[in-house]
Image (cartoon, rainbow, N blue to C red; front, side, top):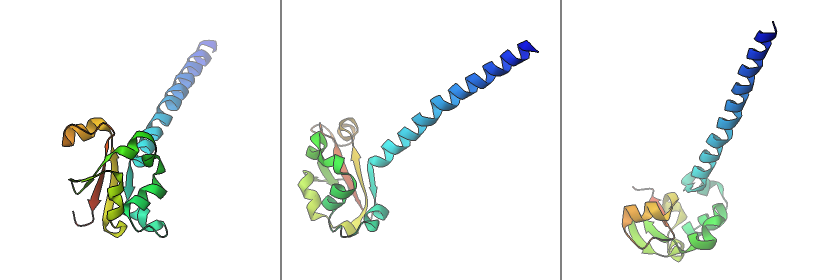
Length: 125
């Protein structure tokens, strides 16, 4: 009887460690992914957002802090300039705004993206 209790305790302990160890990492990865994207639905839920810049300012202010604030902006894969160019893009035309890191931006668009890139996709694309 004592051996069965030890095996049961071992199985329960290993199961608890696996459950705790796997759970948070999956949730953290999903939260990080969502923080890199602003959807048209998110923009529509916010009152008085007229430009893509205002969408970023209100929904992902961390993109305007530190190095990300110097990211290059692309509108339907056409380079627009710096972050200020988001002010010329109407929020009503935006399907998605996505931040990509410097590695992905360099792979996709070439050199000169040390601060990453902000990709704006129009509703027509």
